[in-house]
Length: 168
Ligand code: 4NP
Image 1 (cartoon, rainbow, N blue to C red):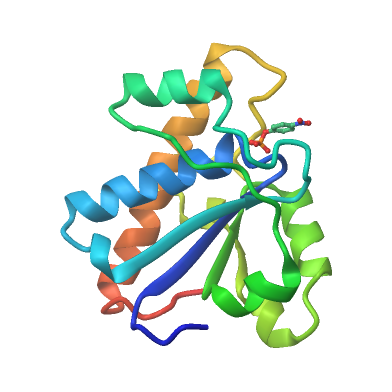
Image 2 (image 1 turned 45 degrees about the vertical axis):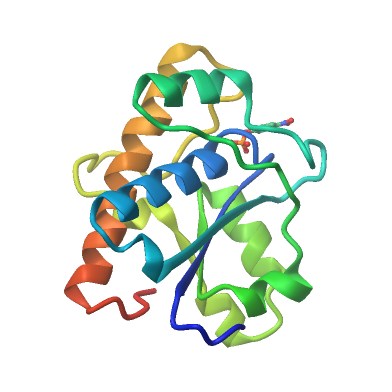
């Protein structure tokens, strides 16, 4: 891991075209608004390779635009051999993501970097994960944005309270 003092966050979902690039864009935006954008390196990746090189799903970009976000990440696949080393915290969207990524960890240290993003939700007490909107309608994409805003605010708040220390 490059020791440049930045906190390195990797958001993970299945395809890297809906939830995780939206999480990346929202977290980048919120960190900038709070004046701490320079403290973070933020990326996202997918478990599957189907969409590698693609922009986020058109529906995800459109819903993001309505909320003031630009989601322009190009999809890439998670690679355990590089990503466990390069990132401090690997934030998964749902249980299947968590099981898959922790299953690729080779050490306890790698495993400890993997944390469900939903753990940082503060205003959605019933939500256990960030559900996949891909096969659903508009409401699913709106809910993803609301959940991601809540969880990313919660995550930033944790960093602020701990003077930007890593907080698995
Ligand atoms: P994501 O959504 O994991 O939030 O990017 C999906 C995108 C594509 C597929 C599944 C989920 N897919 O099967 O192609």
